[in-house]
Length: 632
Ligand SMILES: *[C@@H]1O[C@H](CO)[C@@H](O)[C@H](O)[C@H]1NC(C)=O
Ligand SMILES: *[C@@H]1O[C@H](CO)[C@@H](O)[C@H](O)[C@H]1NC(C)=O
Ligand SMILES: *[C@@H]1O[C@H](CO)[C@@H](O)[C@H](O)[C@H]1NC(C)=O
Ligand SMILES: *[C@@H]1O[C@H](CO)[C@@H](O)[C@H](O)[C@H]1NC(C)=O
Ligand SMILES: *[C@@H]1O[C@H](CO)[C@@H](O)[C@H](O)[C@H]1NC(C)=O
Ligand SMILES: *[C@@H]1O[C@H](CO)[C@@H](O)[C@H](O)[C@H]1NC(C)=O
Ligand SMILES: *[C@@H]1O[C@H](CO)[C@@H](O)[C@H](O)[C@H]1NC(C)=O
Ligand SMILES: *[C@@H]1O[C@H](CO)[C@@H](O)[C@H](O)[C@H]1NC(C)=O
Ligand SMILES: *[C@@H]1O[C@H](CO)[C@@H](O)[C@H](O)[C@H]1NC(C)=O
Ligand SMILES: *[C@@H]1O[C@H](CO)[C@@H](O)[C@H](O)[C@H]1NC(C)=O
Image (cartoon, rainbow, N blue to C red; front, side):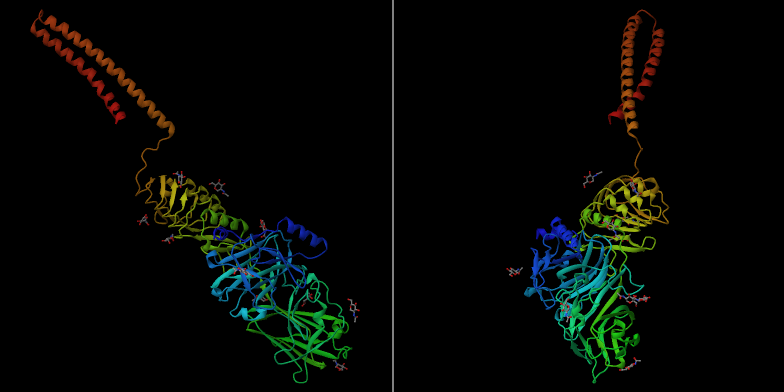
């Protein structure tokens, strides 16, 4: 439980440690392609018969939960565990596999069911590789052998590889294995539209005739082929029958696709009942499909050109006319591979082989790929900034926030708005709406790395600490709503750089200090700014005024001034007291003289004394007032 809650906040990173790096180096020294196979949910590295295939554990590298697996298909490797991702871990769960060589890979994922009576639901979810959605599991997959896995050819541009499982609300994604098998850089090159931005998902891969369903390695094929799985089909639904040979086949294991011999040792041919061969499959409409057809003349009765000639059409359009295998391959028992990419608007793809001369048509194997344009990625700098934000805001597990924030486009991170930046060819973040999510955390300085933000709403959370001054760098910001949080400190002056700001809600926080003048002074008819409900803010209409704006030096000055005033007052009081003494003494003398002089003179004398008394008293009140100011 503790393990799970700490894991679910992280990306699931499978880093190949030193021991495995040695293994890779060793494998590559032998001229072998890179291969990484992971047994999900396993605590130990394992090997499986019959080819002694090595499967790496994922225990300790990833989130999710491990469980015993029920394997619904005979095709799947016989492994005992799987890893599943409960929805409480978030809608996006990813494996990131580091330190792999850049290159072209066949990636295959097997799915299984959790072995537990309370988990009897078949999960349905989407799978993405390197940010591109390659497949959605379809209802009923666990009852159809060939639907228990997905494989695709992808280019890995970086030394880290990411595959994610996206919940669609139908059960917990549960993964049995992940295989990343390097293939030739030009594998399945189909013409000018093929590029490193193309993903080829296998929609069908059939070996025709008497052959058994098998992997390349079971056929003794080259490791460079990506260990493809070939599903056996002995006849088409309404046409053909099987033939086979033990004869060696030439031109098979050659670059770039390295097909195994075995593939060409059996075939389906037309017969009197139905001379044309017709293969039909269901597809998703409005996509491009790359069709690869394999031929080999394995009927020893046919030795010369012209003895078996047929046209190949795909959905009614001639793809290849007058196909003469013997002629095109340069003889019998030699492999011939033809490929054609077609746009399909309907729900079915039909391949038809119509004989035009000689014997009935023949076919040895069929591959059909869905051509998927790889998604553009989110700017790595912004992804990092969001990861920082995720941890500093303490985003709960249920948000996920794993993989790429903006792609696959069907599965962006929740609360994140994306925009495509055609200048850089990257997705960027233009909005964050994490309002009312119970977040307890702080705003990191790195938020300013989300340079394209136009709108932020973090209202009604418990976000504490200061408003980072780096927010002032987000010059495109139009809406900044941080209301009803626990933000404290002052409003950074840098916010005045946000000249496009239309809504600024900082109300209901613990902010203090003066609202930067340029914010308070913004014309109100264009913008709506709210600073209310912060006990300590001042300086805009509706808030208390801030009082004199005093620097530290001014405060020291005032203190000195007051002290000086007090001393001055003391001096005056002393002078006054001294004078009073003098006067009292003079009065005593006068009283003594009164007895000697006339009454009229005494009057005069008192008038003079009164005037003097008043003058000293006139000066005193000023100083007494400032003194009492200081005291109060
Ligand atoms: C998985 O199977 C093993 C036996 O193969 C058993 O010991 C273990 O308890 C099972 N685990 C769970 C979670 O059911
Ligand atoms: C590859 O990864 C590095 C660092 O992990 C990153 O800086 C770079 O942008 C990535 N390149 C691509 C094409 O994703
Ligand atoms: C697939 O067909 C195209 C032409 O249609 C050809 O250029 C290309 O070489 C073929 N690919 C392979 C691997 O044979
Ligand atoms: C087929 O090839 C193998 C070597 O790859 C060789 O030993 C064998 O004799 C060949 N068989 C025939 C019938 O040519
Ligand atoms: C299929 O390929 C054509 C080019 O041949 C392209 O114009 C079209 O957009 C593609 N369709 C899809 C659905 O990718
Ligand atoms: C048609 O087949 C016959 C033999 O079956 C052959 O003689 C003839 O040349 C072929 N014609 C073409 C156009 O290939
Ligand atoms: C921000 O979110 C809160 C709470 O959901 C909402 O009331 C408010 O209107 C939002 N602010 C803006 C500017 O849309
Ligand atoms: C972002 O703001 C901080 C502080 O306001 C400043 O130090 C930094 O240089 C700014 N960065 C950019 C890219 O403008
Ligand atoms: C803001 O609050 C934090 C605790 O949440 C405190 O550590 C910090 O000192 C406060 N800052 C100010 C300026 O009050
Ligand atoms: C500002 O926020 C207060 C609550 O903090 C609210 O009562 C007031 O209506 C808001 N003023 C404006 C103009 O939105």
